[in-house]
Length: 105
Image 1 (cartoon, rainbow, N blue to C red):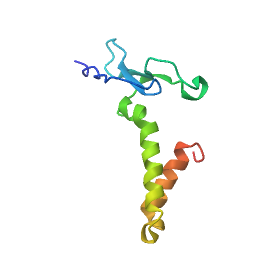
Image 2: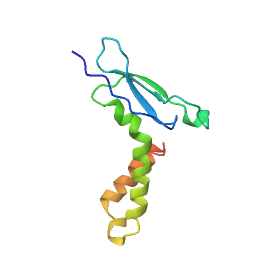
Image 3: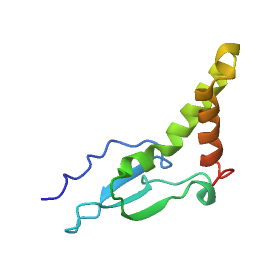
């Protein structure tokens, strides 16, 4: 049997992303798309991705914008502490941000 369908929460912001099971017999087929509503800036906010997600959970992809914002905030906070600012962990966090921004392959 396939995985259970993802439960959806109530959305207030159409830029939130929904994860939906494709409904067919393929257990790992999902789509990620905007919540219903009108987007303020369609060209920069519209998302529609579908396909086979393999071992990567589609919820991880849907959460990426929020995770990136929180990572930026954590780097900003941690950069204020000299002992942390030069740490390998903070460097790795900065590298992950750069990758998410398309600055690294």
